[in-house]
Image 1 (tube, one colour):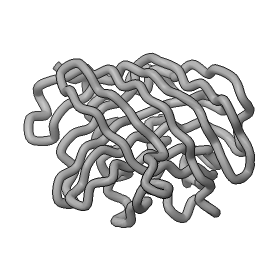
Image 2 (tube, rainbow, N blue to C red):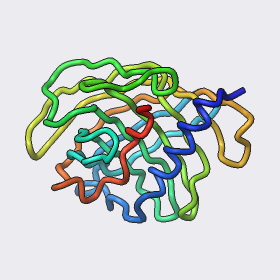
Image 3 (cartoon, one colour):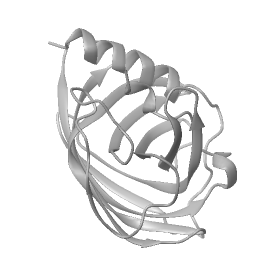
Image 4 (cartoon, rainbow, N blue to C red):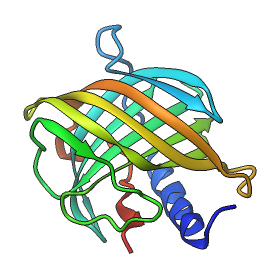
Length: 190
């Protein structure tokens, strides 16, 4: 059963995920810019394009985001990895904060995975543990791997909690001014 805090968080993230109707477009030159495997209560493999940039959030200030969008014209998966604070993070391995029970602060990392069909959000999962490993970072490219456990569920059945494990790799291109990034998930800050 979901806690009231988790329900409030999911409601805020649903609004964030629906905040833009623009996608990030096709993968780079036929090669996907990200691939991810999802196991657990949902099992699938996704691939597509990846963008990164800084986004200004009214509540959290500047945040750095990597957004991975599945190549699927009818919807598909969207994975966001976010670091609170400005600037491009350097190489290294960073733990993900529990996005349900934690309160993100400057320098913390959080993640979420969404699924949509025909422009409608159908599933939402918030990372409760895991890490992101940055292997290369510059103003034009941001690369690494990620591995996290996430809790959430389907919008059609908000009473059933589901758990997934998500792991993959990305080679993201810069999205100047965050123009291609959807709304940030930083609204989990209270």
